[in-house]
Length: 79
Image 1 (cartoon, rainbow, N blue to C red):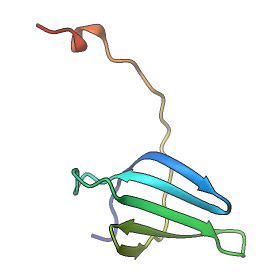
Image 2: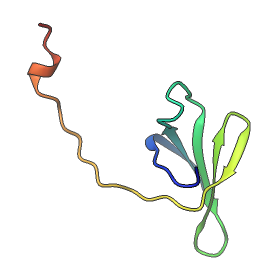
Image 3: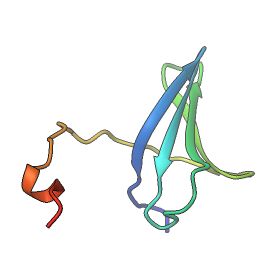
Image 4: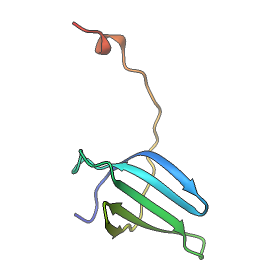
């Protein structure tokens, strides 16, 4: 399980640290999963994933393009 995708749902910037709140599809009921990234002093970032009190090194991450779309009314109307 070295490579998989998660969904970023929020983020906070605190000084030189970015904290990205994640939705992890393998753990859908958890709300304590984040990626924490800090400047590494060499022009890059040093990142780790937190889940509760557990930290795991993150080798990298990427951003996918996203454009919000409002669902059609027919999907939200009660039948």
